[in-house]
Each structure stands twice: as C-alpha cells, then as structure tokens.
Image (cartoon, rainbow, N blue to C red; front, side):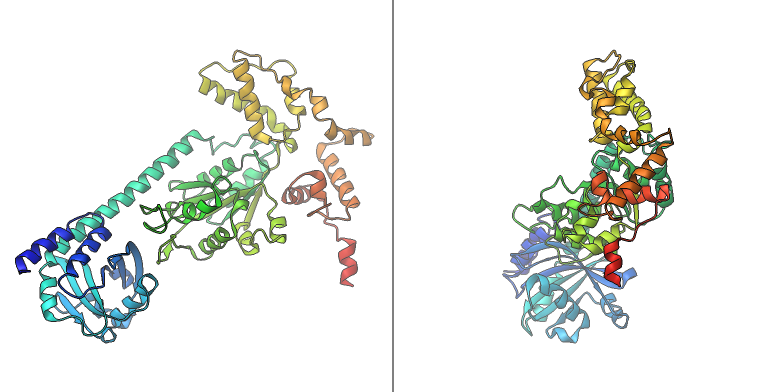
Amino acid sequence: MDKNTFFRNGVEAITSSLIIEDALTKCLRFMQTMMPMDIMSIHLWEGSLNSLRIAATTNGKLKMASNILIPIPERYRGIPEWLQNENLKIYNNFREDPISVLVQEALVPIFGPHEYSHMIMRVKIEEERICDVVALAKGPDRYTWEHAELFEMLHSTFGIAVSNALHHREIMQMKDRLMEDNRILKERLSSWSTTNIVGAHAGMQHVVRRIKQVGNTNAPVLILGETGTGKDVVASALQEQSSRRDRAFVRLNCGAIPESLLDTELFGHEKGAFTGAHLTHIGRIERADGGTLFLDEVGELSQSAQAKLLRVLQNGEIERIGGSSTRHVDVRVIAATHCDLEAMVADGRFRADLYYRLSVFPIIIPPLRERISDIPLLTDSFIKKCSTSMNIAPPTLAPGAINVLLGYSWPGNVRELANVIERAMINNPEGPLTFPELGSGAQANSDRTAPLQLLDELVPLDEINRKYINYVLENVDGKIHGPGGAAEILKINPHTLRSRMDKLGIAYRKRASSESGSR
C-alpha cells in the first residue's frame, strides 16, 4: 500500500465515528494491516493532578471509553510533559520508560498481564496539546522508525478527530445531566412545600428543630418513621436547609427496584458491561455529585449494595459496573426507612458499620396517632391542595367530621389521611365532607382511650403517656428493643420510644438479667 492510500484509509478510519472508542477500534484494525499493534489508547495529560488519564482504549475486540487516572510521581513529571520538542517516541523495552511501566500496570485489569513495545505520538493543534495516541505491540523490539513515519502521517487527523470526539462526549454527558436535573426539578415543583412542614407548630416541633440543627451540614441523616409519615417531606426540607439546595437532589426508592438492577441504578455501568448495556449509564450517586442523594427504604438494600454504599460514605468513591477506574464523588446521603435497622443489624441483615455511618443524626417522625393535634392542620392543607388540582372551591367539613378524623387510629399515617380527604372530595366535591368508612371516632379509638379509665382525675396527655410507658416498662423488666420489648407492645419504633422517654423524663431501667450476669 502506498503512502497516499495509507493516509486516505487512515483518515477514513479515524473520522468514522464521534464515539471515540468506536473510531479508535476501526483505526486499530486498519493499522494492524500495516504494522504490529495489539492495543491503541488515547491518553490525556492532567497537569493540575500531575497524572495521565486513559480516556479510551481498545484491542479490536474489547473497546471502552475509560476514565483511568494514573498518578505520576513528581520525579517523573518531565517525562509525560515532553519538555523536548518532538512528536513521537518508541520504547521497544518498556522498562526504559517509567510512564510506560505505569501504563502497562493500569491496563492489566482490562487486557491481562502482557509486556509490550510502546509507540507514543504526541498530538497537538498549533501549540495546544490534545492527547497522546499510544500503540502497543506484544513483545520487545516490535517497532521501527519506518512504523513511526507511517504513524506520524496521521498526526493532524488524530488531533482533529480526538478533539471533536472529546467535545462530543462532554456534550452528551452534559445532556444526560440536564435531563436528570430537569426531571428532579419537576419532582420538586410537584412535591409538597419543603419550607413549611404542616404540623410544624404542633406534633412535628421536635422534627423541625432537628432539621434546623443538621440541615446546613454535610452529615448523613437517617429518617425513621412508619410508612406514610412523610419521610420524603422531611428529606426535602433537609435539602432546602442545606448549602446544597441549588444542586441535584436525587431520589431512589430502594424497595421499588429489583435487586438485580439496584447496583447499576445506584452506581451506573459502562457500555458493554453486560448483555444489553449498549450505552454508558450514569448511576444515581454520580448524578448527585455535589448535591444530595435520598435513599428511601434503605433497609431494602442488598448486602452487596450496602458494602458499596459504605465505601461512598467512607471514601467518597464509586466504581461503575464494568469499569476499571474509581470515581470520586461529593454526595450527602439522607436515608429513610420504616424498618427497625437495629433489629436487622442484630439479625445480620444490615451491616452494622453502615448503620452507624447513616445514623450520625437520626430524625424520628412520630406516627399520626401520636400527634393528633396535627390532624386539623393536615386536613385543611389536603383540602386546599385537592381543590387546586380539581379546580373547585374548597368544600367544608360536615358537623362532627373532624371528631371522626381525630378518633381514627390512622395505620397508614399522613398518606392515609391524604387519601381519605381526596376520596371524600371526589365523592362529594361541593361538600360538606363526611368520612363514613372510618366509623365513629369513639369506636375507632376505643383501644387508646381505655387507659383513661385507670385515672381518678383529668391530667395532661404527657402525664398519661409517661405513666403508661412506665407501666409497660415495669412489666417487661425495662426491655425496650426486640421481641417482647416495650416498643413491640406499644407498636412503635424503638427509636421513637427512646425519644419519647427522653422528652418525658423517663429513666432507662437496667434489666435484672444483665445486672445478674455482670456480677
């Protein structure tokens, strides 16, 4: 093949695609017809990090857009900078070049352990350094200066093609981020107000105080509460209080995604990582870089995902599935669950180290039955919200309807109340609203009013709670957590019980069994 034909075919291969790894693969296959070549890679020089970054690599069969960062020891800084004025180097004995040694080590996880001859071309446009195009052939003494002369004919073509491909990659990544940010913005606009939690001046006062305490920090937060208590609203309020309020707020319901897809949804995957992975997928953690990640139902995470999430919390590092490089992320994690994580830790279903990382600052949301004073405020808020969505005037409540709401036990908490209000408005949009499906308040709440019969006089509600919690603790020998404990009998989360004990000044009892065991 004459030089003109070589040049024409080489240009056609290099410019065949804006996807850099595809064009590199086609170029490699063409170059293999003219010279020894087993691998081609594109290297970028990161001067501020004193590092080389392998942006793409291929052996003709395996091709990948990579992000492999190779730190260069300070004593070798001048080697990758190429202080001398030349465009091409050959190292037929790779050990003569410390940088080539590091490159080979970085490629071992992808292509296996081999020794290569290296031919490296510095690509510039005018005086701007674009990249290094690196050719590797297995074995020593594989390259000659005749090979170098052919390779260097494509210098300018590589410069234009690689520059365009890198810009295309950057634009596509920006597009993905903009689409995700747009989705997040729509979610936030359609969600409840995060700056005015309904009930903030009643049963949710303690929660609001906790939000203000921790909101403007980067500390992980664990939100605990029964299903339907509004954990997502508290998470949004934490975001609004933080310095990250203008950055991404990425949500993931860990219980809504199959375990087989959870890793790729959280951490992302590289193109070709598995069958069907036709495109690179950026995971939720990476999308939340610089912002906040909200993991709802974190107790549903698999053991594998728990280990990887712990790495994010400890080191701020992730690795995409099918990738060979570590990515650093700056993410604040807010987790929420209705599960008893302490019991899951005891049973070996949840990692203790992850639990302690997440629970740096727990926020416990009391169930609606423990903050019935919030029901009138919540009812008014839901009526106004439904009226707006239905484009009608807010209807009134029927006489006695609020007493029915106050007397019901609300196993579904705030979410159930919202559904009850919406259903009543659909059935009778002009009002007055009634709730016949709830029955009478006295009947629905009879189990909770029974303790009042034990009192000889009317006393504040906190006094009733304090006496009854003490009564239960005495009957279970001070046991709070686990089977037969006070939390199980009272049907509340152990964290909620401890918080209420602290508020009411109830002392923790040292169980007799533990005392006898310590003697």
